[in-house]
Structure formats: structure tokens, C-alpha cells
Length: 479
Image (cartoon, rainbow, N blue to C red):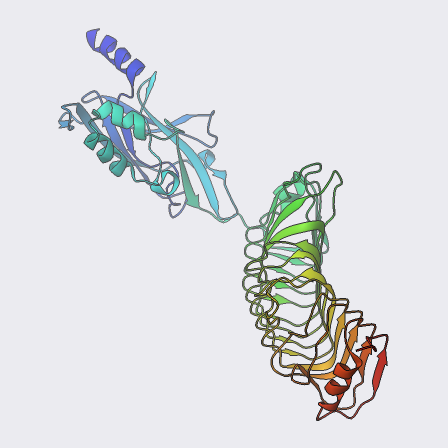
């Protein structure tokens, strides 16, 4: 009777003992059939300890094992005597639930009487510190054993989550598939392949995770709806971390939901993707987008189009070295090192709009088609060289309504198949060392209000390999 009163008093002031294994959130064990070691300390000698398990955290508990605490005491640093126990047991199959496509989970707790459960500890991957290190630190701080356990135990105590490797993948879906509600996610979230088109749609509150999907033979279309009426809205997540192959087009969209300006973070992920059989089309309606993703895509055989207001794009398509088709960029805000590794474009390259800063497309060396800059406002010191590696454009270089004062683009000199400067009010200087036109393509200067006719004529005279004609109209004829 006295012992019972003493235990009740202890339970009101702090933990009675502790469970040392398993730790909450430990790495998965080999399988659901693997034996689990249950160990810890009871405050009573030679007393039964019951092990319970459940497939859910808060209900459905079933006893799966029991053992006796030791008759021999273990004395801790403050003189507290506890009695160790340890037992191995297999958690029954009906006490496991699917946790992910590759793991199952169960929840365990340990008790030494109907009313008293042993505190559990988090694995260091969750808490950031191993339980033994936490207890040692509390000891050095002057805490007693019970106070230390109380400070170091898990927020989920007395429950510990145990995971096991398990195969819940569901193979290949044949046909076109649309995922736009929670039921679709539950039914198809563990697919490994889609033989057809895959469309991910639905509201911004529906996060979609397909962690083992490796291939889509047709188009992959992902819509990223976002929270309305928020400056920094939440965006629906679509997690495809294992996807390596899209057989046709990759189409990513995010329409503005209304309700004012939005600054949008778009972590596309898809960082295992290496092959896209068709084109890439990305369209985000906003004035400022922070974008990242596609860390493994080094080559793209089709066209690439990105239309969005862009802010921090550090690392976006950071591994992409070459595009065989056209590249079209309409980027309405400051660019930061977008496509920092891109060296070659086989088709046309167009930067229709944007505010490039130093570091944008610094590795681009050759364009097989035309190179066009639209209403682009370059950010940087007057002498800043943009596209510093660009040495060869097979087609036409067009500067249309840029904010350039001088043609500080490309290597020195940049070779091109033709040249057009139109409506660049800031350009007042141009020399043959800036651009050399090779072959019979035309050279056109139209409506560049501060570019003197004498400068144009000197430029034309310095084109040593050029055999084409010129069009000169609307420039500054009075200087």
C-alpha cells in the first residue's frame, strides 16, 4: 500500500521510468516480420511489463508481448534505482498500416501497470540529439534522473512509431489518367508507371505525392493552383521525386486566382527527370516567381518555353547543358542565374521580356537559329557584359526595344548570320568588334533614335566577311 502511494506521487511530479528501445521515428527495420527489441527500465523489481501495439496512434491497442523487469537494480547518477527489462517480439500483421509506398508503420507503448506507461524518446533524426546525449547533458546540468527523463522524452511519449520496409507499389496504369481528388491520390499514389497521359489537377488544398512514379509514356500535365487573396500564397504540391522519363510533352501551369499581386514559390522538384520526349511548356501567371527544380536534366531534345514573372531562380534547370529545339523565355522580373549551365541551343533563342542581372545564361556559347532580345531591361553596371560566352549565332541577332546603351553582348566579337537593331533608344555606340555578320544575311538599323548614321556606316565598313544588304531607317541622322 505504501509503495502504491509512493508511485502515484511520483507520477504526479514526473516520469516513473523509461523505455530505451525502440526509439520513436527510428529508421525502418527490414520488414514487418522482423523482431523488434523492446527494452527500458521499470521502477519495480520482478514486475510484469506489457508491450502493446496498434496500427493507429490513439486507439486499437493490443498486447503483443510481456516480460519481467530484473530483480537486480541499476543505480543512476542521483541514486535512483531502476530495474531493466528487454524482450524481442514480432508485431502482428494486423497492427501494421501503410505509411508510404515503401514502408509500413506501427505504434507501440509499454506499461508496468494498467495506469502507468513508460516514457519514450525520439530518434536523433527527429530531435537532433541522441537520447543518451540529452540525458548526459541534463546530468551535467545538475538534474536528477526523473527530471532528465522528463526533459528529454518525446513529445509523442508514451507512444513510439516504428516503421518497416514494405512494398505497396501498384505497378503500371494503362491509359490516360487524371488525378484531381484525394481518392485518386489514394488509389494511384504508388504507381510506378503510366502508359498514357498523366494529368494532375484539382484544388490548391490537394497535395499530390507519387513517390515511386518513374515514367509517363505520354504527356505529363501538372496544374499548380494556389491560395487566393494572399501575397505569399500556398501552392498545391506535386511531388514526383523518382520520375525519370516523360515520353511526350511536359506542361506545367499555375493561373492567377485573383485577389491582388502574388509572390509565388514554385519548387517543381522532379529532380530525377532526365528524359522528356516532347516539349517543355511552363506558364505561371504572376509578376514574381521563385522557381527551382529539374536538377538532373542535362539535355532536352525539344522546345523549352517558360512564361512567368521570375524572381529567384537560382538552380532552376541548373544542370541543363543543351536544348536541340527553341528556347523561349518571357520573364517579367529580375532573373537570378537561370539556366546557368546552358551552353548550346539548336534552334531559336528568345528572351522576350525580363530584367537580366549578371550571371544569367553566362555559359550560353552557340545558338543554331535566331537570337532575339525583346523588351529587356538589363540590370548591371554600364560595362557589364551579358551572355559573355556567346560566340556564334547561325541565324539573326535581333535587339528589339532593349534598354542597352552599347551592344555589350556576347564574346568579342560575336559572329552572326544577320543583325537587326530596332527601337533601341539607348544605344549610341556600336563597333565592328561587337558583332561580325558572316555571309549574305541582311543588317538592319531601324528607329534607333540615338544611333548616329556615321556610327552605322563605320560598323558596316568593318564587316569583313559580310556580303549581304542593309536596311537603315529612322536613326539619328543629325550627328
